[in-house]
Length: 268
Image (cartoon, rainbow, N blue to C red; front, side, top):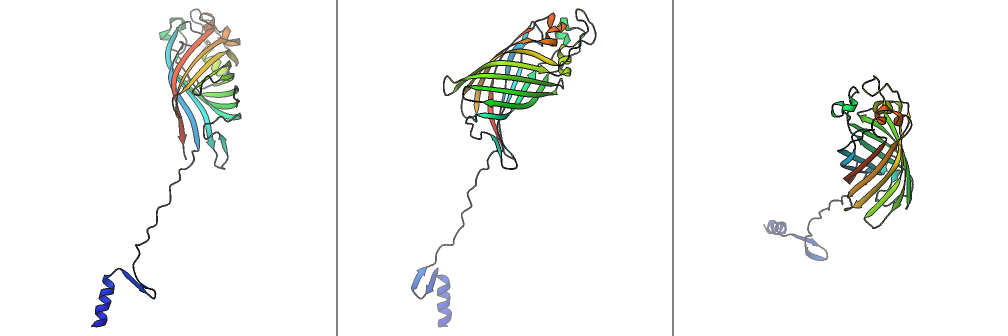
């Protein structure tokens, strides 16, 4: 009976008996979860959208408002572990790949009597990329885009900028631009397949479409958002300038753009 009584008391008290004496039993050990480590982004790019006021179509005398967009590459981590660009957003001087994106507004004959008889051209979205060189006060690029929506043709663009930083938030860039169109691109916007009105048959070839100057300003709102504005002047060249669409209109083109852009990070 004595033995049973001692055993019952021992089971009711949270104590451990050992040679050195008696102490309260320690609390059970709880393993803390391992800290969650955020994975590094695999792709960082800047996507912009806004409005523009420009010539109604290539060669038009009149102007109208329309959508605009932009795409710029910042960072890419490859499956091999190697990376391209800057993950922190700090300038990564030297040569690097870049994205390129452009809207081209639709052209409808019903909206422009001088184009009566010409086929309509839908709004086009050009997506592509290229290579760029960047330094603190100068940059240059060569891009190739394809009209994934709309004209379904290739168009290239060459450019260079002098880069100025009036303040920590404001950046101003200015420099020349040259646009080069494939045969299909030039035929879509400058060709005339059937004579109509004042427009005779015209079959342009591939080559330089325009040469001009662009001024871009970027104001940094915060770590992700920018306010962007641009002014661009172009003059048609070569077969584009000789097109009857341009000769009856204007070979000088002016475009004003304003919009916002956001830095986007993706993890795969």
